[in-house]
Length: 305
Image (tube, rainbow, N blue to C red; front, side, top):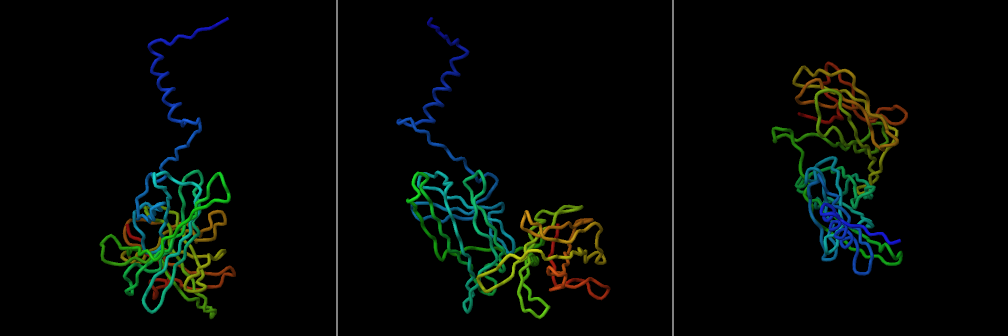
């Protein structure tokens, strides 16, 4: 028995839509070509690196590289503008100060799950122009053919100057401490870098506070440090240096691979986050307790909102 199906006038648009979808999803050989969506929604471009074959673009929420903690995302696009999901990236920032050069704490560049996006962070120790220094960037990429493990293409961008901005308080005049390089006072001569990560957008009340700690091995090598403690004492210098209740010291978060605590801002204004750095044995490596004669720790960060 033959069966006939008739489309009424109301079904005609549906048929046209299905036909259009079929032809847009398949090429003349019947192969599908997935369209990778733009992964940069909500991000601002920092800059492009292009070599005529591929374009690597750096992105983040501000569109700037800044002193201290800076999150950076990368995309890789081919000549047609298509986003590449199977890339590997590595990068090396270096500051040239004439008589010496140094890098900064950073993470490996890794792929964001489910997106054609790659992420890292930098803890820039200095800003561009500080000490007459300039930041340069060496970036390498490798792209593997999804159908052949033997075929890869790659490229590099070497000695590219990048601009690392200073960080200011709202008055736009005074530097804000967001990163600190220190020498331990235990006689070991070990050097550590402590970097404030959050809060980036503080509010009145209890805020998450996070930080990284790295040990400086040499001018270009900074290893993450685990299981230390940052004892926290927030103060408001303009208001008789008062503190606030319900603060939580920063301890190592194994899952997040970061130091995590709580800070309570009881009002808006200028705050100092006074810290004492302790090792995994509870020994003080840097910083001091606030007393009547001592208004601040030698290790502190500054926040104003």
